[in-house]
Amino acid sequence: MVNYFVTRKYFYAIYGIIVSVLALLCFTISKERLFFVANANNSLFFDYFFYLITELGNTITYIIVLVLSLFYSRRLTFMLLLTLLISSILAQGLKHFVFEEHLRPLAYFGDKFQIHHLSISASLKMHSFPSGHTVSAFALATVLVGFLNIRKYDLLLLFIAILVAYSRVYLGQHFVEDVVFGSTIGVFSGVFSNRIFHDESKFNKPLINRHPRK
Image 1 (cartoon, rainbow, N blue to C red):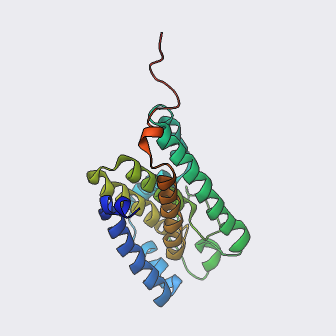
Image 2 (image 1 turned 180 degrees about the vertical axis):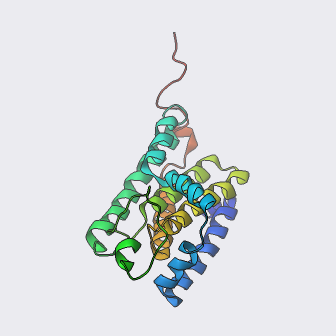
Image 3 (image 1 turned 120 degrees about the vertical axis):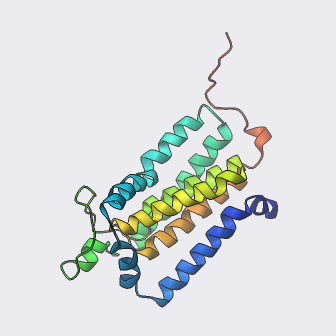
């Protein structure tokens, strides 16, 4: 287990530092102030940029990668399936049964403050905690980091997941605390699945053979 984190130290070390700093800020600074730090600084370019980036945290993106994995590696497929199951149960369970009354920024601020929100984005008002897109982005990134085990991709995958998380606040869909906790669910789910299916020799063949025997 220790070796797993050592070989992927850049991903987990940098993630650990970032999430620790953000968690500390969430405890020391009001959620309103933290929200507007990200949401109030916007431009037309970043509106389109983050509108596209946020879709990388969509469940559809995760499913597309899952379908492609069927032709590549059964180990990756099983890891993705288990991660999706765990992260979905945790995230949706918290959203709908524990923190079901947590309002999203649009409903939380109402008419008191003008928040930056794109008209083409969904105008969701409930189930803010945690951020589902962030859960999905970090879950996928963690699985791929564990599976590929190629150092040059670690920071790229982490950076993409961070952009997805930031986009949720930038687009007025979530508070910072929503994405911070969502990221931990995604990472936990991905690490758990990596450890369950760590033996490559047992799961090195794809579920669907691209070159069937004649």
